[in-house]
Length: 436
Ligand SMILES: Cc1cc2nc3c(=O)[nH]c(=O)nc-3n(C[C@H](O)[C@H](O)[C@H](O)COP(=O)(O)OP(=O)(O)OC[C@H]3O[C@@H](n4cnc5c(N)ncnc54)[C@H](O)[C@@H]3O)c2cc1C
Image 1: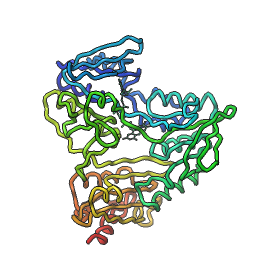
Image 2: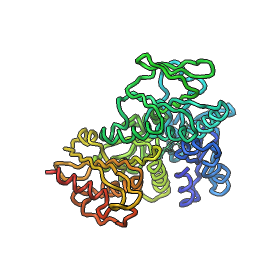
Image 3: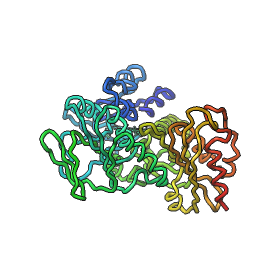
Image 4: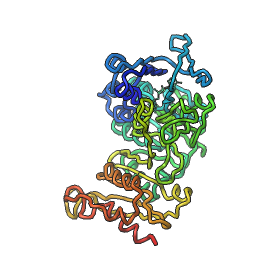
């Protein structure tokens, strides 16, 4: 919808048709965990713009309940089926594939039982909200400890639901140092959330009104609801069947103009890949800003302005109970895999000036390249001062700064917000000591 809206704004004469298989458009998926954590809020609050507004005010031909099944590149048409059961066919001059991603559902017995719920679409959110309220859910198991799983742990805690999390890996957040991940683990456990790390979920059985989740070790958890949160995969099958190239994670491969391997077909959002600015490699990082930005760039390119996107550095932030957790750039393992000679340095510093009330511990891991001195990435955890601070590292990565240059940046100081030397400057200066 970002692409459609911008296209109509800059080139009103272009006929823009949007085909959407569901009856929802333009809502904040990112707000769903917070909405679910507050039983007084309606899911409908997350709708940003209603279909009628797109149609009436923006003159976009938005057709809901239209699922595209095939792209016919040879005659530039798409065919599909409407929710009424009727088939449709539509010609295009230029096509945008913006089919997003879908939740991965583990291939285990019982994954389809009522009460085993993913969280991706607004309908998933509605379903989960009703399930929690109607069944008076008192206990839940979250499978997966990615950012959506962790945000849901907070939501369930807010609702007073006894929560457990099961994770296949032996630790949380493998892209950050073990010590930092322990801080996140400690926060979850301090709020009574039980973590089962290094366990494989084998099956889910109905047990009366509840669900019994069995793990590889023979252990089991009996809960009222299971949240399936083991990641997403791109909806790239339409593109693949049409012979378009796929990239990492099987996302649709696009160039810096967001064109697929067919110059008349663009792809953007969670279904498409991007270039990593630091490595120049293709990556698949399905997040909201890139999706919106890709939509704008595609609209500009279609309406005659040439827009090239440099790419992403992989910046992300999320909240886990009282903690802010963020990352940007490469982890030390990713940097090693991309041919750098990564050096990392993990520090603990403070969020405010010495002795200023409310001072909190800030954990920062910063990574630089021993060969070039370049800054490669950072991860941060703290009760405050992480969410926006990480953006300055992201900007430095886009600018290709060295760790030394980053350490020389003029950053703001006042006692309630930071020590004289901002925590990131301290991290940079300490990392510099480790670099040759
Ligand atoms: C719970 C949750 C929390 C999140 N939190 C954050 C966050 O804090 N920060 C962040 O950056 N990102 C977050 N995200 C990710 C963010 O929501 C996505 O990156 C963004 O929504 C992607 O937009 P999109 O348009 O590519 O895909 P979508 O919003 O998924 O839209 C794709 C649309 O295509 C439709 N479609 C698919 N196939 C077809 C077909 N064949 N025919 C017709 N229609 C089709 C789908 O029905 C869907 O409506 C979160 C996601 C979730 C689920």
